[in-house]
Length: 409
Image 1 (cartoon, one colour):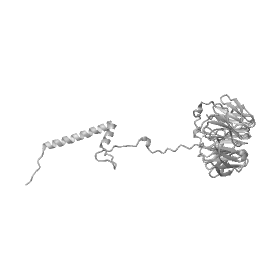
Image 2 (cartoon, one colour):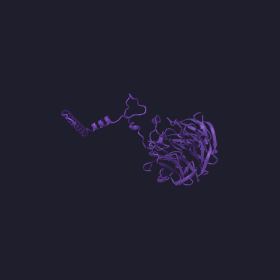
Image 3 (cartoon, rainbow, N blue to C red):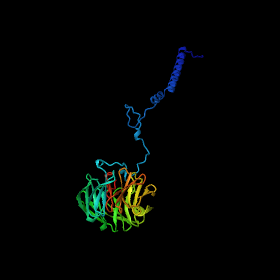
Image 4 (cartoon, rainbow, N blue to C red):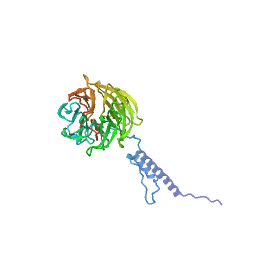
């Protein structure tokens, strides 16, 4: 017997309605999605599966987390190291900023100090100190100024507020005074006795240790970037010596010939620049390999050094031809030369805080010269005493002084 399936009119109607409703619903969703990007975002988030981790429990729903933008991995390089980073601002730190600027000039033959107002270019004070004053060194913390009187084995202490003598320290034949970068030791360069002396300058200048420099003419030096050693020139032997500052002992030497004078560390701390009065230029010395890697001719009597305020250039005084050469650190080449009109004898150098003026003592002309570092022109000639030497511009920029005639870091 054949059994046939009977039709259900109500079920057919219900199915048709459901199909129509579903089509209408999805059409509405499609229209909303087109008209509203926010609806798309909502739909995606609402329908997305939950993000799970190994520590989520059944009754706690995990959150959707994104790392904060400021902790995303980056490929930015570290800033370049610069030995003189603390001098770049051109701003004198306070409370030193409250002091009036002065340029202190030691006159070696006269045994006097002239004080110049750098605003008016006039000598405003003058007084006697010891015999043969060579340089005026700011203390490490810039609390005092020290005039090194080589001929009378003493330091004349100057008050930074009054600019006048307030005391005296007895140490043997100081040609130059330096301070280690960490401020723990002073270095008395005793050229006459071919040695340097490490001293505790904070406690009566007590002798810590004496280091013999077995070559004549030890006079100028600079420290490595980390302060662990120094390189010192020996003018009359053509040698640059290396001294371990921590253990206070001779650590090596390199022969550069001629008459090496001033020493300056490059801004990146990789090499030392050494003026050579005999070879009429500047040696570039690798302190690790202990060898001269380049020689840069500058002029007759290359003598003093000063790093520009932007640390891109090195100023070199050519004392015997009356000029200043400008070396570009990047190319290690001379890019300019400035001459003193009528001739002169520029010796030790100093910058004003802004780096717009280069001051130079005129060793054999009883004159201080002021160069405009933008044009190279001499904008002032200031008469001073006989054989003006290691002048200092104070106060100046930097966190502390390494001594000499004002070397700052």
